[in-house]
Image (cartoon, rainbow, N blue to C red; front, side):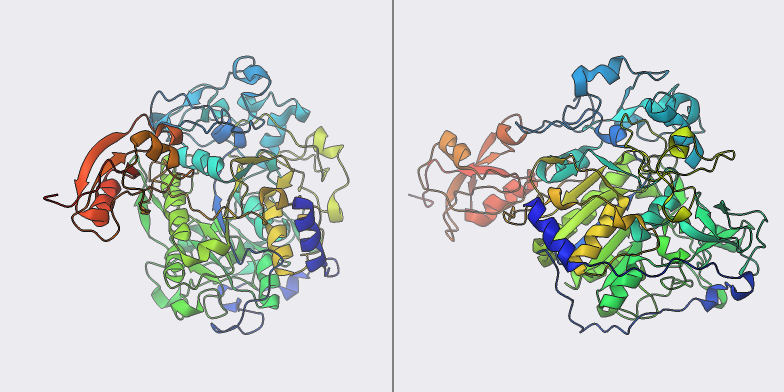
Length: 634
C-alpha cells in the first residue's frame, strides 16, 4: 500500500524547479518591517480547495521543541511504573530501535562517560543542553556516538534539575505518557532525523522550505543588511553579497517582536527563497502558522509588542512568543511583521492582512467554526513547547492532548493527519547516526567535523547544511495511520514538507532544497483501512474512555459483557434499555484489564442510559453489562 501511495503522490506532484538562487546586491536590500507585504493570488473564504492525492484533506503539524528520540522513547514500550502515570503496552507492540535493543546493552554498557538514567515526573524541569551545529557533530564522534557528555551535556543550572552526564538521561511512559499512547494507537517512526545539525531555527526553516541557505544579516535599527564581512548571523557568507547559511537562532528580520521587542541590538536575519507557503498560495490551498503568544499585547504606533506570559508546571514564567521559532517571519513573502489579526474567522487560512501568520487561539476558532485550513502548523507558547530550560514534557503533554483531542472531536477528524514532529534534539543523547547525505567543508571553529567534510558534496555548493543530524521523534495521528506501528523508513523534517507538496501537487521548492531527496511518510499510513475511531487522552496522557452508549442484551454475564466490549479504548457498552427512564443496569467502571486497567468496579445504576453515561463519565469511562433489566416496582 505504501508503494502504491508513493507512486500516486509522485505522479501528482511533478517538480517545478526554479533557477538557482541569485545573489542579491547589497544596494538592492532595504529590510524595514513595514516593507514586507503579502504576495500571491487573492484568496477568499468561499474558494474551493484543490483536490488531494490521498484522502487527507487537512494536515496539522504540531512542531515541538528540542527532544532526541531516545530521550523520549529510549525504553518504549517498557515503563518503570514506579511513579507518574502508569503505562502498560498492548500485547504485540513492535520494538523500535532504542536503548532496549540488543539486550539493553546501551543502558548498562554505554560507550559514553555516563550511563543513561531514567528521569521521572519530579525531574521534568531540566537544564537546557548544548545543541549548536558544531558541538552536536563533535558529540557524534564520527559515528561512534560516545562524546555527548563532553560536548553537549549541561549538568547544572539555576532552579532546574541537573546531574552529571544529564544529556544521557531519558523519560519513559510514566512522564511522556501521551506520546507513548499515541504511538500505541497510531504510527511512529524510529528512523527520523533533523535535516541538519544545530538548534531550533534551522529545524524550523527546513520544515517549511528544506533549505537553510539564503540568509543575510540585518541591522534591526535600520532594517538594512550589514556589510558583507561584518559580524554576521550566517555562516560561510558570500564575500560579495553576504548571503550565507542560517546555523543559529537569530531572530527574524520581518517581526516587530524580534530582538526582545526590539529593545536589544542583536542582528536579525532575513532569508531569501521560497517556502511551502508560497507553493500553497500558488495552488490556492488554505494554510497557516499558529503560534502561542503571536497576538500582540499592545501595538504602540502600530508596532506589535509580544508580552503575553505563562508559567510552567514548576511556576517559572516565560514570554509565550519566541520569534526564532516562527520560520515564515524570516521571509518577506510570508511575514506578518506587525502581527495583524485575521479580518474574520472565516478568513483564517486565506489571504488577508494576517498573511497566514496567526495566534494559536485563531486555530481554535477556525476548528470550532468547522473551517480548518488545509495545512496548519501549530507551535505552543514557550512554556508548553517542550524546550528544556523553560518548558518540560508535562506542560508539552497538556499542549498535545488538548489540541489533538479537539481535532479528534471535530468533523474534520475523518480527513485529517496530525503530525507530531520536533525542531532539534537539544543535544540529548541518541544512539543512531544516519549516514551523511549532505556534506559540508566548513572547518572553522564551531563548524564541520571530518564525518561531514568527507561526506557527499554539499548540495548547491551551500556549506553548513551537513546532515541528517540527530534522530528525533515523529508520529502521525490520523484515522489513516497504521495502528501501533513503528515505521523504519529513513525520514527527516523535510519529509513532512514533501508529504504536503505531494498531497496538494505543489511541486518542489527547488534550489537544492532537501524536499527533493527526503524520505516518504507513506509507510505510516494505510489509506485502504481507516481506523474509524478516535483515541482521546486525559491531561496526564492516559487514555480517557469516552461514553458512547450501545444497548446490550438484557441478560448478560459480567464475563460476557467484558468479552463483548469494544476492542478499542474510548468506547463503552451500555446495557441500560434505550429510552427507558426507569431502567436499571450494572456499570463496570474501568477500564478493563485488557485496556490497561487493574480491575472493574461494579455499581447498579437506575435512571436509564443518561444516568448510566453520567456515572461512567464521572469515573473516566468504563464498560457496562446488565444482570437484569426491570422497571421500578417490577
